[in-house]
Each structure stands twice: as C-alpha cells, then as structure tokens.
Amino acid sequence: MTHILHLDSSPRGSRSVSRSLTKEFVAGWLQSHPSDRITYRDIGKYPVPPVDEAWIAASFSKSEPLASELTNALRVSDELIDELLIADRYVFGIPMYNFSVPANFKAYIDQIVRVERTFTPNWQGLVTNKKMLIITTRGGSYFNAPSSKQLDFQEPYLRAIFEFVGITDITFIHAENLTMGDEARERSLTTARTAIQSLISAW
Ligand SMILES: Cc1cc2nc3c(=O)[nH]c(=O)nc-3n(C[C@H](O)[C@H](O)[C@H](O)COP(=O)(O)O)c2cc1C
Image 1 (cartoon, rainbow, N blue to C red):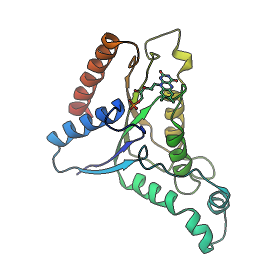
Image 2 (image 1 turned 60 degrees about the horizontal axis):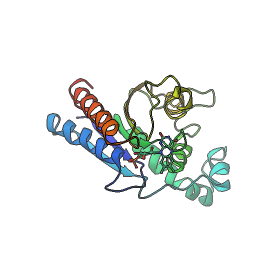
Image 3 (image 1 turned 90 degrees about the vertical axis):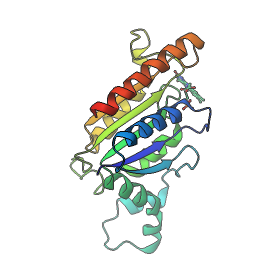
C-alpha cells in the first residue's frame, strides 16, 4: 500500500485549475490502486502560518527537551513534517504567482524545511525514497517558450528546495496559457490531462 499526501495550495475553490487537476490524478490513481491511502492537506483554504521568532529560536535550540513555549512554537511544523515523512508519494497542486510560488506555499516550505528533521546540519536531505508529482498552473507560457523560460522561478525553485530535503524523483506537469484565450487554454488542459493519465499508468 502506498500512502499519498495530496496537497492543494490555490486559494481558489471550484474555479481553481490546479485543484481540479490534482483531483483528477488522485481519482484516477485510486481507480487502479484502490487500497492506497490518501492524506489531504489544503493550504489554500487553510494556510499555515509564517515562521516567527519563537519558531526560529525553537528550531535552532540545542536544549533537550525544549521549554514548553518552544515546543508550542513548533507544533504546526511538527505536524506538517510528520505528515510529509509518513507519506511515500506526494501530489502537489501549485499555481504560479508572480513567476514563483504563492506566499502560502512558501510559508509551507518554511515550516517543513527544518534542520535535524528534514535536513542535517551538513545539508543532507532526510526525506528520502519518495516520489513527487507537482502540477503547476500558469496564466502564461514558460515550459516550451524560449523567450519567457527564464522567468520561470517556480520549477527551478521547487526542484532545488525539494531536492535539498532529499526528494529527487520529481515529475512536473505544467498547465500553461490558462489566461491566453479559450483555444490556448483548452489545448494546454488537454495536454496536461493526457500527461496525468500517462503518469497514472507509469508512476
Ligand atoms: C496573484 C496572482 C499572480 C499570478 N502570477 C502569474 C505569473 O507570474 N505568471 C503566470 O503565468 N500566471 C500568473 N497568474 C495566473 C495563475 O497562475 C493562473 O490563473 C492559475 O490558473 C492559478 O491557479 P488556480 O487556477 O489553481 O487557482 C497569477 C495569478 C494570480 C492570482
């Protein structure tokens, strides 16, 4: 049995394309793997807090055990990291915002990238033997567009940060041109859906 962490980060509900695509992948996956387990996390609707001074003090504290206020400061982070470590695979839906990730996804990253929990002091990743699918949604086009490819700070950043914590097997499916007219949008959605169906049989 594989345990999948399905995470959505769009603040939009039924209008969100990334939500509909991650849902499509997970529904298709469950059809062929009905006994797999899914944990769902919605940071678009229920954002995680940014790290604060107590979080930073607690995460770098050398005292064992931590004082109770420091333990409290890491409660959300501990919950998110436990959820990440216990899953085998990840299906993340992440819109492109301002050429990168939405602030709520960055807040999630700041909570889960933590010394001694997801990487060692000498920068060895601790989240190993995992597979990750990231479905991105974008108004414009970057993937096959030489003139705007350099504006894609989303995929390179996501690859770098997840590889840093040890997740090296990462597949991206980009749904692009979503605000470039009906024809371009539909063409891109068809391509993304085809990639989703192929990955369901090959992941
Ligand atoms: C605040 C904001 C910033 C955005 N920035 C970009 C951008 O830099 N590049 C781009 O191609 N699309 C951008 N978009 C368009 C979204 O990526 C696109 O609408 C996508 O479908 C959003 O994902 P969702 O449908 O899951 O909500 C932006 C949208 C919003 C709301």
